[in-house]
Length: 348
Image (cartoon, rainbow, N blue to C red):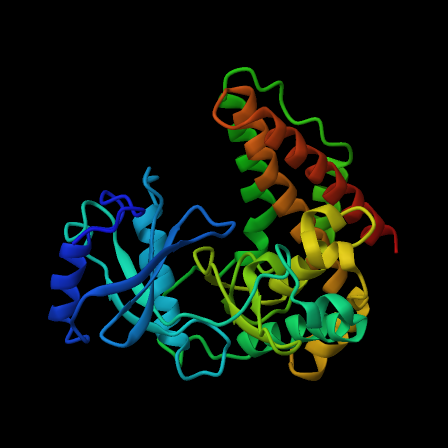
């Protein structure tokens, strides 16, 4: 019971059938099996069985040390969010035991009808700037819904380490940047303004904040939109989720928001334009949240700093032959753009 275009090392459908039967899910043949693309390293396979549609998600073929833990965390978060109104895919069942399917944990979720606006825009969204403007506003509204969830009440009280979360950030990411020095051939970070941004963040850190659920990588490429309107259908790729300061998600959205210097990264929707300004995103979030947004610029600068350092890791790996050079170069240029954007925010 294998499907020619799906590597049996990734998904063994015989094993999957037995496991699903054990979960009392509808039986029968696997139909309409297809591998889904996406920016993620994780594997996504959509199929039908017993008149029900599923998407299976598992870590990449080459497991990294934390791949299974990240997927277990993701499944736990999706289960906790079910019923909260947060626009996340609905979890159907999860297999947290990696011995079942050849070393990888996996889970099944409902399929979401939607499209990723960085890869494609349907005619409705491509032709009407007013629709794209509302798409942008709804990205902020969907995020505010997540930020409003009481993480303790939904059973995620022990998911992260919120105590000292903001205090740890600058040191944590500078040490990450420092660790790239172990990679052969990497000459070290050439990032103008690196320490200026770090010092500014340390000096201006908000004293009062309230922990909550953070998506951890909230930007347009991790949203699926409804095919028939401007609404966010689902927030996807939850593996970076933690309990921290949800305002960093809003800062991340603003830091990555399509602008003259970042339109390339946001693909189709960035090229089409017509999106709201970051200040409008903040207004939408503020109207749906009781969080204090007075330090929002600080969060946007932290997001530029953190994401810039994360992307520089691929640049460093390219020197060591562990990533394609052209990808490394593109991401290094993006890092420089993020630090330039951080300085613009600081000066504003």
